[in-house]
Amino acid sequence: MERFEASVGEIIFKVDKDILDRNDINVHIYNKMLEVNQDEVAVKKYNEDMERNYNKLMNIEKPDFQFEFPKEITKENYFEYLKLSYAKLRYEIYHEVQKIMKETGQQSITNEQFGEVIKKVSLPDIKEKVYTMMNYPEVPGEKSPKTALKAYLVHMQEDEMWSNEVLCLQKSHKELLLQIPQGIKGEEMNEDPLEVFERERECENQLSQKKNAPNAPKEDQKSLDKSTESNKGNGSFSFLGNQKDQQNLVQEFLNRDKKKTDQIKEVAEEENQDNKPEEVKEEKDTQEPKALEKSAPEAKHNSPKVLDEANNNKEDAAPEGEKSADNEEQD
Image (tube, rainbow, N blue to C red):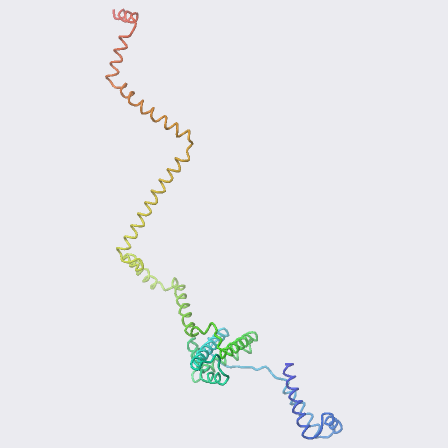
């Protein structure tokens, strides 16, 4: 407001000076004349009119826009709409400028050439296309840029911070635009911004559909489950090949696991053997042959024939006294 008052003061001073110069008087003489004739009716009316007009000029009321527009054009959506429109405009202008440079061999173009390019590329047409792409509702009998402008004016008066963000976007757009005549290429010039927007939106839609899939109606879910079971039964996982290929893969996997299990057992047994003390190993080595040596004679000794022979030999070897004692008992 202070800057506005200062600007108005400068304008008033210039106008007063121009009028006074045409009447060959200066400000000092003019003020003295008003003071001397201040009781005159004409002078009083003049002073009152000047004061009233000045106050009316200074007391600027904040605008109150009451436009109606589609509720889909929120502050965030309008900002995206404007940003995309500016990006598309710069893209089109850049490639028009590059075309001129290739044809003429210029490293940069003149202001006149750039002005012709600006006229050739229509921002309102771009805004209409962007508005349609973003699926905002059309107002009957009204062009879409005008509908978007109404939304902007209403949002602007309600949110000063958001209005400042839009101003920063416009300033940045202007700076980038003025670099184009010098042949400066921005990153966004490699691909059409509208094509990028369309591709990103398609990806978002696909992610949204996957996210909402579990919440589908029961009938759709049953149908999906049946389809899944059918695919499983038929082995229709196309990325693994046909059914025969899948069976071979499964069998190969099972064989691999079995082989791996046998290998683990062998390694475990070897480690178990390596971890035993040397004394235990030596004792086992010495005991095993003895057991083998004993086993054969013991088996032979315990046979019936060997036992009878042993008993006879025992009787023959008995002392004479023992034999006579036996005979006496028999008698």
